[in-house]
Length: 543
Image 1 (cartoon, one colour):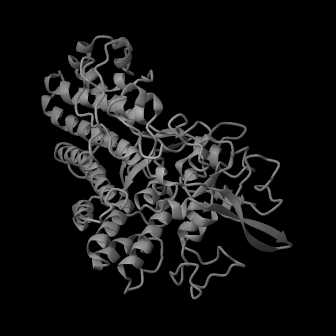
Image 2 (cartoon, one colour):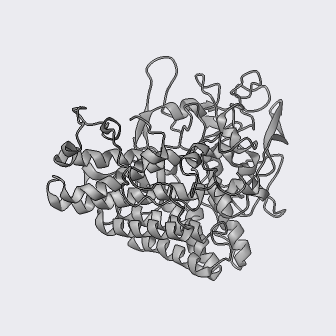
Image 3 (cartoon, helix red, strand yellow):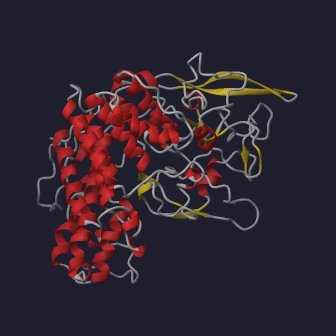
């Protein structure tokens, strides 16, 4: 599809039909609006096209960048990657990355057009129209949410505007934006297929269901309650977020996968539409993720996502269940990966890990740590999460895998519930229950009794860091917690590993110095959009 570059055009009813009706229909010849809404197939196809606004976050730039590399989770092995503008203070309104401003308003216009036109369309049977409109309500809510978590208060796009309308509009307040997203989620939840993926017909799996709408509502309310957006700490906002997550839990339509199959949560070749996934984007069939992120000695892989020592340190000890900084935890710096939370080995490739049938060598001079190779690990680690070892990209026939970007999963719902309830009521029994479900599914001890509210907050935040690593959560979590200056404005480190005979020695070392300042809690509005709405749009503070 052509990318429409003007904010004015994106939220308008486009005069040039060659732009706004260039969709991937089978015949490829539709140029008249009436031909869309007078056809069941074309009207349904219009909505299907709106789904393309849902992100795939595995490869943001075509060269393996991910948002984890713009947080303290990882470093990009390509040190000239544009992702680093988030880290080195070269970000700005004239140099943006993944701002999505234009893209989201484009898809908001499409969602609004479907909501306006579908009641009088030729969709058959007509009884399908409410369900399809419910999907459009969800998509409109999702696109507004993506704008809100980047820019804060935004201009709500609640209808398809005409070119004759005044489009230099003021932003709505954050509370107004949240309320609108919640209303759209509530509308979607009662209109789409009830329940979760298990309740959807085979041909509808992957479309929006009730629990997806509820999950978006719960996440939105969690963001609204967080310190960035709730500076006075109103407990009622936290309680609303906790209640919204609890609704999903009470429906009992989703559950956690066992530790044995957890690595396949993202593998739709073997675990398609599994019980932990609530909603996911389009399922790609390729091996690009492995090519971009596997260690460098594996058929020319690029090793892009290098986990930091900060992330590795967040994984507790398995037997004691204690953080490694606790002197009674059992942590041994001479054998740092021994007896750790099993998720460390599931999500991070460590020195001497087995990958594709042989040991990975990230020690100095090893096959996967070659300084003359610009793609070599910068931290002593590679990412393992999401990757499927059966994928093949070397000489010979490529072996691809079916993998979506998972947008909502049940583990996040449990963590959302625990965080919000702890802030609203303190560390009550239900807070422990939600967190412990996630810990015990991988054989980790339950959290110790008697934690204070502050101690529980710290444990929940670290549990999110571990469980949701590389999933686009940490970048935004640290911002909504208002902890950017503490966690992102410092060096990230790696582990230098030297081998003497069969003995390894481990030394932490600084990899990159990162910069974070107050303005970076929000994205800058692209300057081109400010130029088109000079009276009311206004730039975010500090940019």
